[in-house]
Length: 249
Image (cartoon, rainbow, N blue to C red; front, side):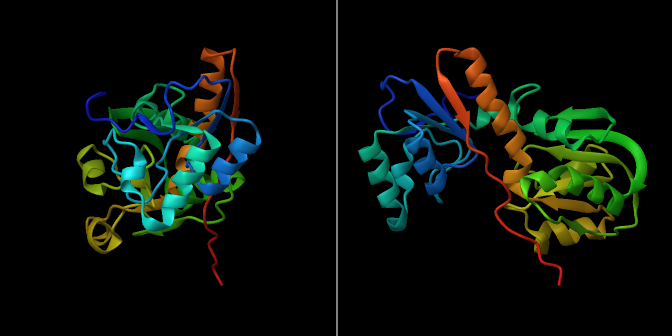
């Protein structure tokens, strides 16, 4: 961790406020923020940003990045007295319970990690077609209301070394360098017109899942962790699921 250049700072509210009740969620959306206040939260711990143009790595309060359409959210936060802290960089890396490890464990690929190079893992599994791996992943994430996944490349290709990582996993070429023959990507920031097409040219198939889905298990673990470390606090998790529905007809 580079504590001089991290986004893991207070993003709204008074950091000196006494805390009794803590809400934890993947994203500080209007819905989640309102629910947290209705349940008496003093502190909202968010993995992702409050606003659209927040810069990862910046320690600044996020009101400085707010769009005009988002300013009312920060006015509301001030009136409600809710403090927002972002726990992103640490929790991506945190062993066992953090984002990367929770995602890997929840996928239950039943293989051995053969490469550990943050933010990626490469897991050796029994050879299977990429379409069968995608079906396995879909079964695991359906409870998070993702009803379909996308496959890019040859869906009949046999694969045995699968790269996965933190939520923003978008670099197929680094996966190839690490020895993977397939990758699990998240939908935010990945440019299929550039990276995706070339990955297909390299015969490197990929599976796409929703960013929030890939991090939800780790965020739930964050709530449990805070409650365990600070047993005097009331801590609750606000679940957030896939933001869209896949229609196939």
